[in-house]
Image 1 (cartoon, rainbow, N blue to C red):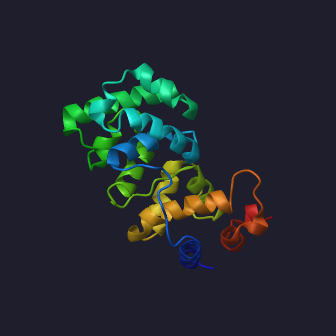
Image 2 (cartoon, rainbow, N blue to C red):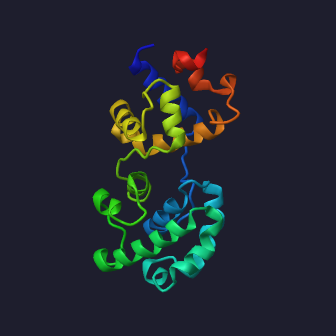
Length: 211
């Protein structure tokens, strides 16, 4: 199979398995999505979805969020882990959104990346899922699968993102990154992985993995 054929096989299989791609984090607007994505770092979407309603009940916009202290935010979000850093980030970015962006989440990659506790991946998720602007956020699932599928050398997430953007058509990026995440969770997990269940890797996987 040529690389182009491999890429097409991946696209077709994912489209067949996941024609619909609901966003895994519960939110109602760009601000609540931004907060949920920030909270999901080194945690699971399922856990974040149990905690965000408690936080958003008290504050679901930057103006209400800055009325809470960092400690109050931390107390609510403790179960998701890394709460000291995340609570400071949530309070800090809410303040900046009010001061610099009229309380709105900016539709701009650089402006998003300047916010406290918002890295490139979080900014990419917000651009693609809140504003439907093509981006290819690479999480651990995508990083793992791009390597398993021999579509990236897997040295780091920056390289994986470049390879994904080069190989996949831009108009598919937003849907594809979610499809790959769903596929990784269901068919190609990091732990307890079984090749016979992994439809895509069986066909396109790198030789060292298929051995």
